[in-house]
Amino acid sequence: MTGPREKNYLESGLCYRKQVIDMKAVVLAAGEGRRLRPLTGTVSKGMLPVANRPILSFVIDALVQSSVTDIEMVVGHRKEKVMNHFGDGGDLGVSINYVEQKFQLGTAHALQQAKDRVEGKFLVVPGDSIVRPEGIRSLVEVEGDDWGMLVTSTSTNSKYGLVEVSGDTLINIKEKQKLTEDLISSGAPSVMALALWDYTDPDSSGLINTGTYRMDDSIFDVIEEEGAGEPTNLTRCLVKKADRVKVKYTDRWLDAVYPWDLLPLNEHCLSRIGRTTGGTVEEGVVIRGEVSLGEQVNVRANSVIRGPVTIGDNTEIGPGACIGPNVSIGCNCRIDPYTVISECVIMDDVTLGSHGSVSHSVIAQGSTIGDFFGVGAGEYTVRLERFTAKKTLGAVVGPDCRIGHHVNLDQGVILGEDCQIGPMSKISRNLPDGTNVV
Image (cartoon, rainbow, N blue to C red; front, side):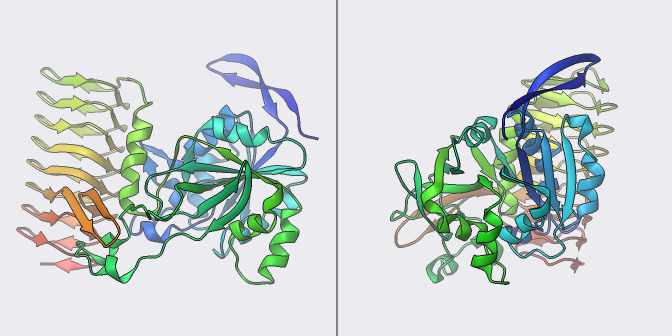
C-alpha cells in the first residue's frame, strides 16, 4: 500500500526525519543517445554534464524533493560509469538498485527489465531529462487505480510525441514529426544540423509527452500483448489504456535530443547554482553574478567572469580571460590568456589556447585546442513552406580531439571523436570520428 513514512537521514552532521513515499521509481537510464553523438560515444546520455553535473543527478534530485527515495535504475550503454558514479545512492539520500538492459530495444523493453523489481503502483522517469519535483508529485497524487502521464507545452514540437487529451484524460499520442525533403533542401549547414531545428507544426497541438508516468504492474501484460516479441515504444502501450491515464501538466521540462540541446539545459541548471568560491582569485579579477568556483581553481589576474558560471576543480583561467555568461567549465581544464567564452559547455580535461573566441558551443572531454581558435557562431534561418525557424549555432567538438593554432569552425559544424586538425585550417563541414586534417 502506498503512503507516507518517515526515514532518518544524516546531512551536514545533523540527523533529521523526513517524510518519504512508499512508491518506487523506475529510472530509465540505459539509452545510448545516438542523436547526441559524438558526445555519447564514451558515456550514456544521462551522464552528459550540464552545470558540471550529470543530467541523471538532477533526475535523482527531483525524486528526492518529491519524497521518492526507492529507485530501480535500468542501465545499459556504458553502465559502469553510471554505477560507479552513483553507487547505492546512499550519499544522495536514496536507495538505488540496478538492472541491465543488454540491448537497447525501446522504452517498453527497458521497463520490462524491472518487471520482477516492482509491485503495485510505481513511477517511470526518464534518466536523461530534467523535470520539476512538482510534476513528479502530481503523479504520485493521482488517485485510485488510475495511471498518470506528465505533459508539458512547447512552442517547438518537432522532436516529441504530441498528446491529445479530453479534459484530464489521455486520448492519443502522435508520433514525433519526421524530417521532410523541403527541410533537407533548405540550405542548412550540414545533414546533422537539419535535425537540430526546433520547429512548430502549425497544424499540431503544442502539448508533448515528457516520458514520465505513474502506472502499475499490469503494464507488463500490456507490453507483452502489444509487442508480441518485437521492440515497442512505451507510449503505444499507454494509448492502449488511455481511458485510465490521467494527464498532469508541468510548466518546465527540458530534454537533450541533439548536441546543441545541452546549452539550454546548462543555462537552466546554472540559474540555480548560487555563489561558491574555492581556490585562488588573483588581483584584478572581476566576478559578477552567480559564480561557483571548485577546489584549487586558479583565476589569474585581470580575468572577467560574468555569471552564471561554474568552474570545476583544478582548473586554471587566464590571465585576461573573459568567461560567461551561461558557461560551465569542467575539472582539470586550462583556459589560456585572453580567450573569450560565452554560452558554452566545456567538459573535463579540456585545454583551450590563448586568444580564442567560442560561443554557443560544446567541447567534449579530453580535447586540446590551440591558440587563436574561433567558432563562427550566429543565427541561422531556415524558411519552409509553412514556417520559418531560427537557431543560434556554434560548433560541437567531440571527445579527445586535437586542434592546432589558428583554426576556425563554421557554425553548425560537428567534429567527431578523436579528430586531428592541423594549424591554419578552416572547417566548414562535419567530420566523422578519427578524421585527420593536415
